[in-house]
Amino acid sequence: MNPEEFRMALAEKGIELDEKQMSQFERYYELLVEWNEKINLTAITEKEEVYLKHFYDSISLAFYMDAFQSDSTICDVGAGAGFPSIPLKIVFPDLKVTIVDSLNKRIQFLNLLMAELGLTNVACFHDRAETFGRRAGIRGSFDIVTARAVARMSVLSELCIPLVKKNGYFIAMKASSSEEELQEGQNAIAVLGGKLEEDYQFMLPGDAGERHIVKIRKTKETPKKYPRKPGTPNKSPL
Figure 1 (cartoon, rainbow, N blue to C red):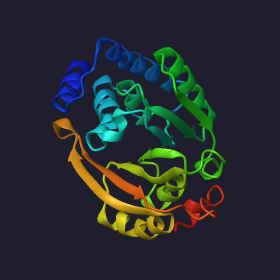
Figure 2 (cartoon, rainbow, N blue to C red):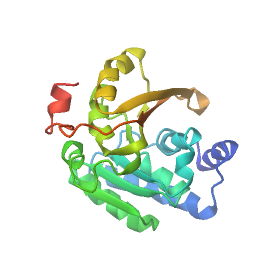
Figure 3 (cartoon, helix red, strand yellow):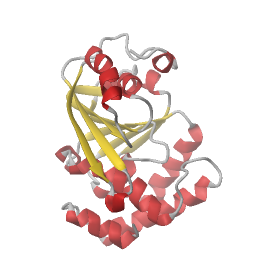
Figure 4 (cartoon, helix red, strand yellow):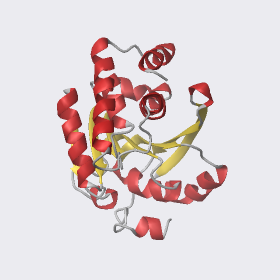
């Protein structure tokens, strides 16, 4: 997917990009490749692959959630090189974005990226999701919390649902999502105050792979003991 094909594919979904936004994506790509030589940001560096499997894939969230087309607050857990939150922010500039990542070098890259692209209302935190989710003023404060292929649903739910405000959404992006994984995660989702609403399945253009967007609504407050200490959710999933 070259940049013009990217633009046209989004237009087919009702998302029109202007020249400024197209130049922001181009600069994003250049910086991603440049910094990827210093720190491990992505295994995907071919331009057409980045536009399809990072940029377009990130924006696919907006195909299923109207909330991105407003000034919603979104937290991206384990954002790495900024996916999906930064492509969404470029497309929907009114979004208020918070990014948390455990590697400081990635946070440095993201801060530089914000400056280079002229993006405002983006806050980047160097922290573990387990401790970030216990911070006063942060916990239970976001309209949408998202994570892209970070961990299994049972683990991901404990890292993300505590950050969501009541009646907000946790959206997990998965390359593939087996019924078994969702079944495994049902207990964790319920314990943490969430309810599975939908598992959207679609194919990336050009048969480039299956994708799932798992939409979980937070129906009640998360018990105070969650998330547990760093590393615990992974070692002992709920």
